[in-house]
Length: 125
Image 1 (cartoon, one colour):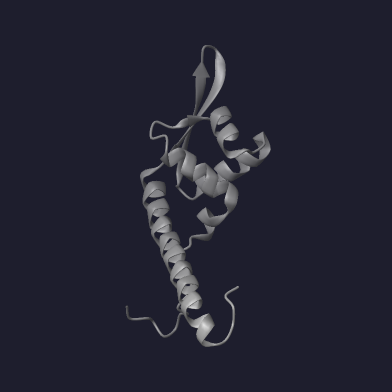
Image 2: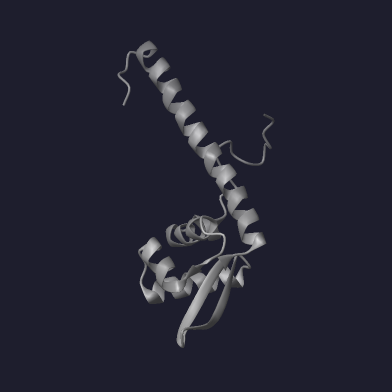
């Protein structure tokens, strides 16, 4: 694979910082797994977030066009439905592809270290 000389081999520029944050990654993963969307309470439970925390992360994701939020009523009670947008799904899948490369690179480096460490007279860490 040809490397761009202006970027480091392990720079992983495709790790979208918006998605990479733990809570937002949890939200998007939950929504990808539920194509019809999730109610706010269910999403809060799946992600282990407080109401305020989830609200703030949803706002950030909505402003970026990654999620869609529909507010309405279910049996006369307020109901908020959250769904991943088409753009959100695309960016999430792009992010996963880069994350998979990170895992492959780390595994390859660990295997290489196991091979080379005895040659250097060192025990693998």
